[in-house]
Image (tube, rainbow, N blue to C red; front, side):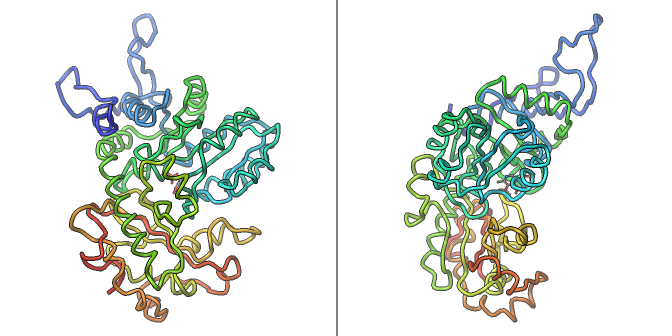
Length: 428
Ligand SMILES: Cc1ncc(COP(=O)(O)O)c(C=O)c1O
């Protein structure tokens, strides 16, 4: 069945009592027992299971081609549930560049419980080979990764994980199953921040763990039932509702991002664009092989320094200055000023220090476009004017100390294409 059809129908049924087409939200926390004390209708208490959550889980499992899905109250809670499968003495390999919260969980919490983690440049398979150990129990990948959009070869890592009996876990938040299905090409588990494209409207938090085999799903579900990081029925309902338009949103936003990235790659004010859809991108060949599109996130290095990058962020139109991604809004973020505090002590920070990130929304048809990006980058390079328009301050010295790269992170979000001809999203 096509993913568009699954996104509408999977896990949904007409309400048997009322005939309602739209599923109800089942808010009850507790369920009636049978006269013999059993629960023949499946549900007992909402922490272990809930009908609205179950409907979302069935849909997500079908979209990802998984045996089962377990939904959580956030992406971070889903990540933690996967780490609950580890034991003292286990070794983890994780990317140096991935969502910073994942690194933080491994570095600051799992390390205290006897789990040792090494952070490597995951796309570099030689590094992976050098760091694999007999005790490696889990390899975490995120592809394309947050925030540098580097691409990891899922099949190649899966072979190596299998060779030492480690689980391969892929954070598939950025591409979503619309563009990439890691379980079909060797991953054992997939993790999502449903807060992003699944929710799709920047108004609900959630997470999900999807597994290739149902035994592992049962272990994750058991951890959830005991640990309790469950999403509310209303949040599950909102996410399930948004999934119906997931393929349309992701494809549209992705097409828009390609246009934006192409435009920026030719712009004199931009030093470097990181986007796997560009033929010049180091991850392009692998991305072509394992993705059905390149996603709606674009990273770039603005020529100049941190202030230049901040100035660009300060002057964009359409793109709003905010964190997160996957909603219908286009966002721009100076990512390094978020992550530098967390990595100030690290020998090598995860993100280039002067990174700004822009999520892009779905831009198809008339709407803001790459031309919208192109307005006036040189004006954006005037730091004095820029800082009068933003309340973010940044010490150039502090940033430059960490890595001499100056980047913006773009999230393309708006329905409609970010084209050059439809107005300016850079300040004109
Ligand atoms: C790739 C990725 N994974 C996981 C998370 C964590 O998700 P949440 O914020 O829903 O806890 C994020 C958040 O930005 C993310 O970008």
